[in-house]
Amino acid sequence: MSGTLPKDPYTGESVRYRRGRSKVDIDHVVALSDAWQKGAGQWPGRKRVALANDPLNLIAVDASANRRKSDGDAATWLPAYKAYRCTYVARQVAVKKKYRLWVTRAEKDAMVRVLNSCPGERLPGGGSPTEAPARFSAK
Picture 1 (cartoon, one colour):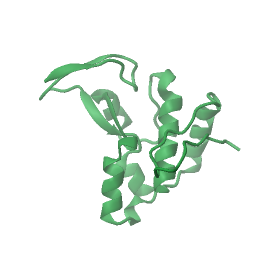
Picture 2 (cartoon, helix red, strand yellow; picture 1 turned 90 degrees about the vertical axis):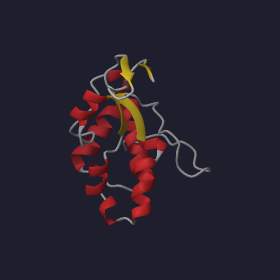
Picture 3 (tube, one colour; picture 1 turned 60 degrees about the vertical axis):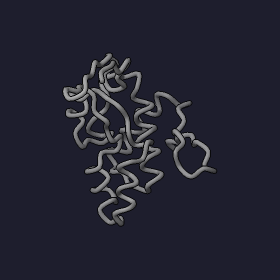
Picture 4 (cartoon, rainbow, N blue to C red; picture 1 turned 30 degrees about the vertical axis):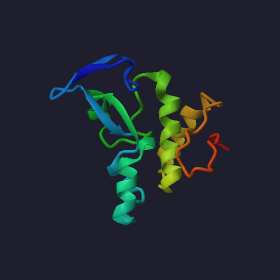
């Protein structure tokens, strides 16, 4: 199997992939080690597995960009492709909200800075079936 990721959200470039030699990773938008440090370390195993497999927290990306991200949060890493930053940060907020993970002051400041540049950005759904997508408020 092979194909092309038409527009990598982290770089804005198309990425060719081929089974066994892929340049595409499935990334955790909220890195699992970041989640561990910010609350998941106290969770039961089933909740950690839910976070690790939640489609809201998973995205196909360029492998080298994913390696650069490592376990970074919004304070330490943002996508090089600036047009995706609002969507990326909104997704991080949605995941952290859904799983009640905390954020550092530096992380919150970075999130607010990014999302203030796109005040109409909505948090993606993915919570309970009755939960409507929320707007981010920097107040």
